[in-house]
Image 1 (cartoon, rainbow, N blue to C red):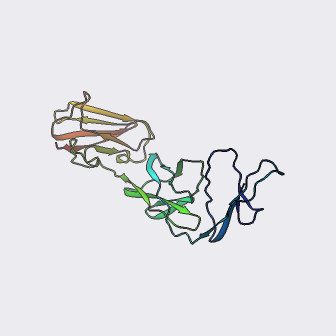
Image 2: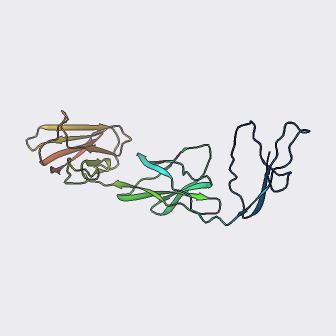
Image 3: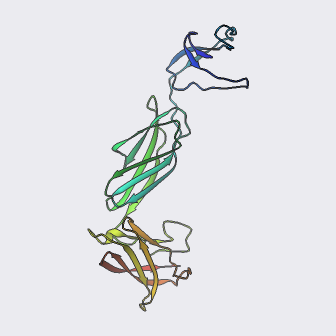
Length: 247
């Protein structure tokens, strides 16, 4: 039996003969005496071990940040997924959108969970929305925020784009579903060269918010630099425009 303070205050019970260790978390500020007794039965027990006095000072250490934040969008639903903070004393997580706490955006930590999911209904506005997740401990210390940006535009972006670039922000072009407003149905993008030849067709289900083109034709080869005509179609409604591919 492991004791904190008076002998009647049993902190933890461990079974077995091998070397063990235990961690006492969320201990209030103050001084505490720890000791251990070995029990064979209620009548057969060892003397208490030599005690150790530990002084717990005010916790000013920030928790470690969460890991691997990803964001998914399905229509008007936004889902955030992350791996828990490695810190043992995390009490809850906060979800912020553009530095403002989202509705019901506080999630209690669970020591048995490694991955968390949070989703809510929100129509992302045009432009860039930044989401953040922070870990908080029992006294309110906050971790560094882990952020992820979501870009929503009504025209293809970036335009022009460069398929051979190492920068993932510029080596493919996104066609947003919002190019067509207030329509539902299958979402597709057709891409043609200036001779009218179909180069590539992209398709997605009704919940997708964008389609991406990596500059490749149906055979998997990057096409030549130049101007290409696109047709975005949702259901029976479509719009057209041009994009520039630059190698």
